[in-house]
Image (cartoon, one colour):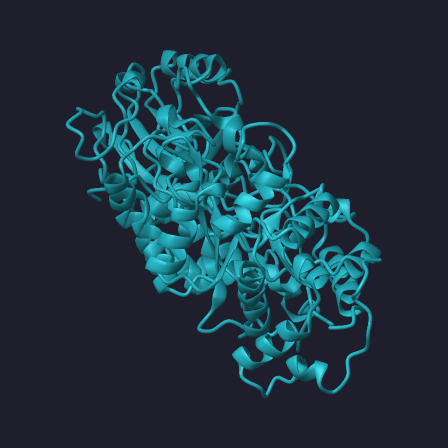
Length: 593
């Protein structure tokens, strides 16, 4: 138990619990009565797997998070709500009764939860060019998150991806700042008309700033650009998110011209908080302060630097006890001023009050029924259809015949929910296989083809012959996340895909390629052998949306949110840079009939 945190909630000290008082008054009254231990606890975010309920009470922790794949057992919506409520009751057992704020990476739906609706990753939504659709997806995600307990979402990612080698390209809505800025409607969807309303979840604009512009597309690398370019390319989406009232901003792992963003006072305090007038809370990324000096294990200097730079809440998943001890020592030594501690707490507590956590701290289980609901899955199916980009359609082979067509389907991504959902699905890196309920692309094709149609499937393409009207090859990438997805070398299809495509091509039937990937791939050498090409991105659990476009239930309307390279040597390639692409930014065909 920490010293100096005892006492009871008298009428005076409990003024912050009175919902009739103004937010500012409640926060200030609470702040005046908090000890240093309590304030440092509020600034600490630990990973759920590294704490007990007793720790939450004893150390006055302000926040917990579930890292990617950190889930209760069993991984059900009800178990999530039970877990959340258990931790929350531990927080409420403290003298000031300050509730936790619990964070999750619900980046394309509530993607850690088995059975949740998995929407297309951001690159697909950028192709859809529909800000209202993105707002509705944010609202649907907020409902599913609310039912399971958490009240803080580390989304949307408003990065501007400038090099497709980057393993997080699919987390970007597009390569020009206007696209992510338009899609900050996700903030409005997540938070609702006001914080604290029904199914309102705190949104996070991330990662601040320049993460999509690193040299070589290296994740967590160095963004070597001028301040003018940083402001022109990478800052506008954050400005848009702040205008929409984003409650938090997450700092990026990357450096800007050699200085880590987590220690960059100019970017965090001078630009974000003062110039852009961001009044919400600033949170670090996972162990982000530990990267400031480039050595493993955070130091007192890194703690001091990050807090003085303007970070309000520090994500220290496992080593949170040492962080608390270190920050307290830095404050007591005068190296971190109390004014900075109070500013951080003021921002954190304001959001907790605005969210209504003091009045409604437990999971709102009325929303459990929305997790993976038919309504949300139908919204996702529509999003999938709108995100498909038709890049080639030689001889109008598409749309396929729904009446009595004979279709051969092949490819490792045709019948695999995990592959079509990508990273950040159930686990951090995602995985192949039947990892969560949904409709695979193959199942969607079978459901859409009609009773008189014939659909034959072979993963590797064996068994195809000339009797089919078309062969649909669903190929591309398998799941990855963050730096695990960096592709510094070749960016083409793998040997398995190429062999499958060769078998289909040898049959003489028209070949339709559906490319499931988190970015453009180097396919120009193979493209002449294909009759049609559809960029499907990472569609999520509702594969029937892909079939809707293949069969013409919906015409393709998607437009490229990134420039498609002619060869990998063109990377980085972006709109307006004078390079000759295979397909330009904004390209996308539709059907004549």
